Length: 205
Figure: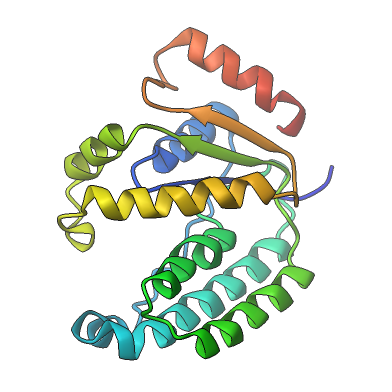
C-alpha cells in the first residue's frame, strides 16, 4: 500500500487548496492541514528581514518536521492529502531568502544540513501532484482570495519562486510525480477534467 499520504505542491495560487477539497469530497482523502502555530519571529522578520529570516525559517522547518512525524504515525483506511510539502519550505522559500541575501551563507548551510537530515527519516508521499498555471492566473487567484498575509504580491516575486519550483521538480525523485496544468481545471464540475485526473490517480487511491 505504501505511504499514507498524497502530497500537492505548487506555487502560490496554483490551486492546491481546491484540489485538496476535490480529493476529499470525491475520494474521501482526508485533508491533513499544516499546523497553525503563530511564528514568534514573524513580527521581527517583517521589521528586519536580514536579522530574522534564518530564525523564522528554522521555526517553520522544525514545526513542519513534527507535523510530518504526526502524519507518518497515522495509518488511515484512505490516504490523507497534504497541501504544502516540507520540500517547498526548504527548496523554494528558504532558498529564495538565501538568494536574496537575507539568509547568510553560513546560516543557510546549517539550515540545509538539518533539512537533509530530516529527509533521511521522512516517509515520502505515495505520489506528488505538482500543479502549474500561468503567472496571470496565480495573481488573479491570490487577489480573489484576499488573504491579508499575502498582501500586494509582486509578479517578480512569483517569477523567482516559479524558477525555484521548476528547478526543484526537475530533480525531485522521492516519489512518482503527476503534473497538472490548472489554468482551466474545474475538478468539481468538468467531467472531462475529473475523468483525466481519475485516470492519473487511480493506482494511488
